Image (cartoon, rainbow, N blue to C red):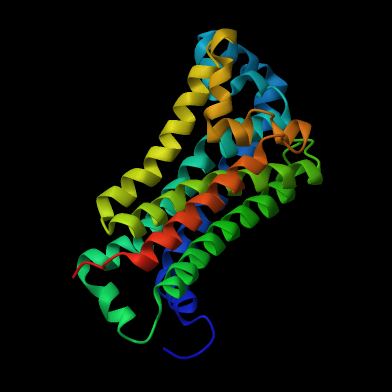
Length: 265
C-alpha cells in the first residue's frame, strides 16, 4: 500500500458517512436541549422537576447541579445523551478497527499487501481517535455558539476542560474495544469490552452517588474521573489524567499482543 498513512486515510474514507451522521446527531441534540434552559430555569419548572424526583435518582443523573447553565449542559449532554451517542460511535468504530476485519477474513488480505501489524494497529487506532476528537470539537463549537443565546454562562476555558474530559472518557471505551479486538480477534469480545467499560464506569459512579459511605467507588470509575469534579462548572478535574493514562496502557498492550499473535483466517 502506497502513500502516507494509507490505512488511516482509508479508514476515514470508508467511514465518513457515519461520522457525518453522528456529527448531525450531536448538533441536533445540543440544539434541542440547550435553548430550552432559559424558559425552564426562569419558570421554576426545573426546580419543581428536581424536587419531584427521588434524591438518589437526582444524584445518579447529576441533576443536583442542573439549576445552573453549566450544570444543565453537563447533566443533559456531556453526562448523558452526548456520552451515550459518542460512546456508541466510538465502540462501533473501535470494534471495526481490527476485530471485524479479522472475523470476515479481510485482515489477512490487508496484511498481505506489505503492511506490518504495528502500522495497522497504530493507523486504525489513530483514525478512530481523530473521529472522536472531531465529535468533541463539534460539541465545543456548538456549545460555545449557543452559550449566549441560551443564557448558559459557560466560560470557554471550563468548556475546554469539559470537552477534554469528555474526549478522554469516550476514547477509553473505544480503545478498550480496539485492544480486546486486537488481542482476541473476536468482534463480540471487542464490542462487549468497549460497552462494558462505559457501563461499568457509569454504574460505579451512580452507586458512589447514593451515599457518603460509597463515595470511594468514584476512585474506580472512569465516568467519575471525567465528571465528578464538574469541569464545566469548576474547571480542570484532578483525575482527568487517569483517563488518558489508562488509554495509553491499553494501547500499548493491544499493540504488543497484536504484533505477536497469529491472525485467524
